[in-house]
Length: 107
Image (cartoon, rainbow, N blue to C red; front, side, top):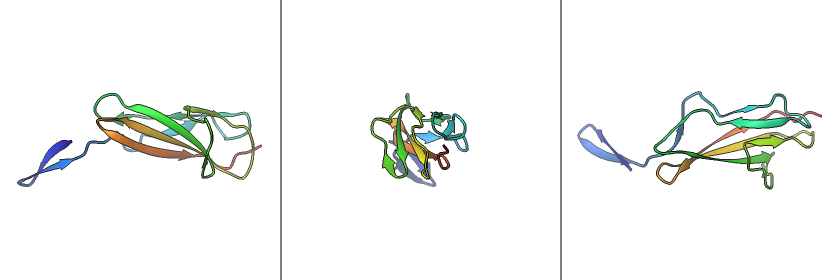
């Protein structure tokens, strides 16, 4: 926990991992369509020590079983969105997450 002086009072704030402002994460791989491979680019983060990224992909609001890598191969078209959740953190700084979504998956 970090201590900061605000006025004449010492205040403690819990540390946390943070993404740099306006820096990502973002998806690469082009238009989401069948056979395309989408990849999450994490962008720059700040925090104390090494930050460990974790990934989870979602179809609509449901998590996709075993889709926990930075890259995901699109298997089917439809009127749904793919979302990648990037969690970044460590034991010292805690965990912070950011979601990145696609448009409708094309055939």
